Length: 195
Image 1 (tube, rainbow, N blue to C red):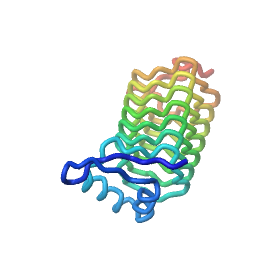
Image 2 (cartoon, one colour):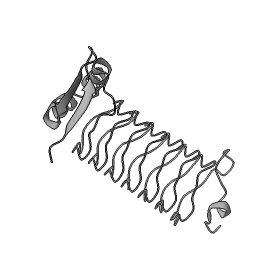
Image 3 (tube, one colour):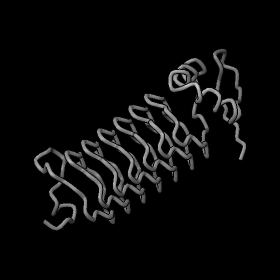
């Protein structure tokens, strides 16, 4: 599928860019991508269905981007800014997302199985029906996140902050919670795990 994204250049003129142009910039690495975003003042970059499988995009800025159905499996997006982005049904399997910012992001139905999410910020994120089975969620911030119907089975939630998170209907089989003294971390009984 070919797509075009619209942005405003430095002179305020409405312009567009094809998928090939974006890929050329992304292949140069996160510094080139972030510089392009800053220089071109992209608004709501449309990167849906983009295949970035295995890409090295540490510290990249995808804030407010549309990454709906994007393939980011096994990509390195550690410390990346994905705040307010749309990652509906995106593939993030086995991706390195340690320390990434997903605050207020839409991850509905996203596949994050076996991803590394240590210290990730999911403040107010929408994770309804997301697949998080087998993920490393140590020190993750789920404050006010919507996890209804999400599959968290076999995940590690050590020192995770789930304060205000909606876990209705979430699958919590074999979830690991060790430090229940951490503020915002519910006890096993509070989230339906047998002691």
